[in-house]
Each structure stands twice: as structure tokens, then as C-alpha cells.
Length: 419
Image (tube, rainbow, N blue to C red; front, side, top):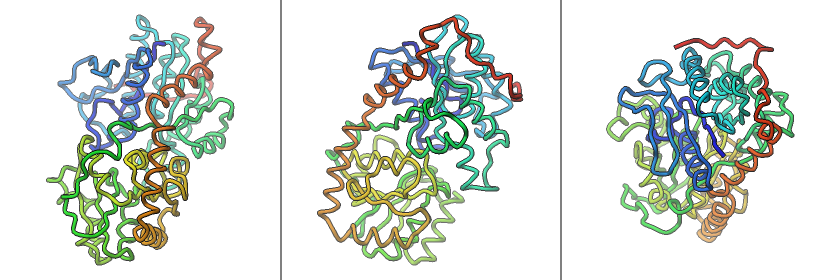
């Protein structure tokens, strides 16, 4: 099958851990690679955000990346990309005249919009993965939400016009049904993990400032919703344990980073500053050994569309303490691969960690079960196979009638600016 993936702001070639570079970038890269291994042809379309980027890149994994000229060839915050979506859609429309895909898989709502606008000309079915929903973001961030005001309305429209939705967790299904999307048009396919790279075997980064008996690790972009402040507050009640926070700017940039300064002030206030360490941005190659150095991995965001870090920890055979939100509810099995705690409740997190640190047998049992769950359910080849089944089920009618027109988006007006 010839598959076009559209990921307007999240390039699969980007360095993870940078500004707005995280789970979606990884998901697109790994899914594209796994689909190619299965015999499919994949082209990923992403916005050109650097002057020196070539028009096309043929990756070692076998998929192609096309850098779409839409807006200035430099970094633009994703919430400011709407004026350039018209140019993106026009590029796709022109490209698919001579290189028509069998199916389009759009990642994120803006990708969904440009995909719908381009695909309707050629009668190509569009499958949508949101990665995050505007309604959920608005619920938790309120006035701090910087998303364009039309996002929620457009997300619903995309859902109604798509051939189907590939959701990453059961919690997202509930949100989509609330939006009015029929359950029959939603398939649940989780994110995956590289179980060869992330495994219990290998070196552990024991030398990274470890001065306590136990180490707890938390990984992610340094933004408030990730809940690092909750982990810091919990440390006040967890003796002889250090907290390592990985992610954010480079190590040289930690001193002037606003969120790092806030978290350090909080650690000072709780009297745990000597037990909280920031590594800065870490390469993906070094992440497995850092995870293996931890006695437990903490993932306690306010909300989380999926939560890849928890999967990586499980694949490395480490117990996970996770907030019972979003995709973490599916991934981490309470009492089997780790523990669930309520979000933004540091006293509960602290009590859970104290119990876990005092019980090495439980930690080991959770780690073994986590590794087994990761390899049996979340390998990228399994995820790719499930995604392909979703493509075929959700687009069956249109794939068997290539001359059928995709539903138009003209029944609701959507203003899309030019570049």
C-alpha cells in the first residue's frame, strides 16, 4: 500500500527533546519505519523549517520525507502555523496529482485539515490521529492554552469528515464520542516502543551524580503539565532517594531556563534541592542506560495523550508510578507493571514511592511484568500491523472504489490563510 503520512510540525527527522519535539515525532518515525518493513511504501510530508533542508530525504529506514514549503523556512511555533496551512494543502494537492497515495494518515489536527483539503480533490481516504485534543488541552490549561481559537471546532469537523480515526488510547475514544464521532469509526492503536533499544540488558548510568540509596527518574519536556513539580514535592516524604529529571534544554541552557528555575526554587522550598538533579536534554541513545539506572520511573502529568516514557521504562524492566490519566491508564497496569496515583497529589505519590522503595521484590516483579507487556503488546511491528488493519477496516469502501470522491468540507466554513 502507498501511504502518505502528514505531520505538519513534527518531523520524523527532528532531534527529540527540543522545542515541540517529542512523542509525535517519534511516533511518525517509528510507525513509518515499521510499515516499510512490512512491505508498504511511506512518504512523510512535514513543513520545511530550515533553509538548508533538502526537498526530499530518503531515510535509511526506507521511508521518504518531503519538506513542504509552507511559510518561512525557519522554526515557527505550531500554534502560529494556521496562516501557512493553505500553502501546505496546495502543495499536497499538486503532489498527489502525479503521486496519488492509497491512504493518507494525518497526525495532529492541522495535518488533518490540510490532508482533508488536499485529499478531496483526488478521492483519497484520510485516516486521522490527533495525538492531543484541543478540548482536553483547554480543560486542563484554561487561559494558558495558546491553541488557535478555532482548533476545537476544526477537530470535530475533521473527525466527521475522515474515513476513520486511529486513537492511541481508550480515554481518547471517550473524548471523541463526546465530540459526536461514531464509535464504529474509531480504532484504538497504541504507540509503540523499540524493545531492542530499550531493554533490561545493558549498562546503567550509575555515575550520573548518584549519592543516595534509591533513584527515581522522570523524563519529558519541561512544561508545567508534565508534573515535575509534583514529583519534587513528593521527594520531601521519600527519604534517601534522589530524583533525576531528564529533558528540556541542553545542559548549558539549564541555568537560564524559566521552568528549570521554577522547579529548582520549589526543590529549595521543600528542602530537597540536594536530591533533585537535572540532566538537560539527553540523546535517545543514552536514554536506556539512564532508565536502567533508576529504581522506579515516575510519570505524573496532569494529562497525557499517551505517555511513551512509561512504555520505555517498562521495556527496560523498571516499575512505573504513573498518574491515572489518558494513555497511562491503558499502558501501566496497576498492581502488575506499576502503580497508578491521582494526578497533582504529591502526598499520594510520596506514600507510593516510600512503599515501593522499601520493597525490592515488588519492584523486580513489576519490572519483569512490564518488560513482558511491552514486548507482547507494544512492539512497533505489532503497532504497524494493527495500524494497517485499521487502514483497511476504516477505508474499505473507498479503497475498493478509487473513483469515489472524498466528502467535501464545504458544509462548514473553515478559513485557512495562505503563506
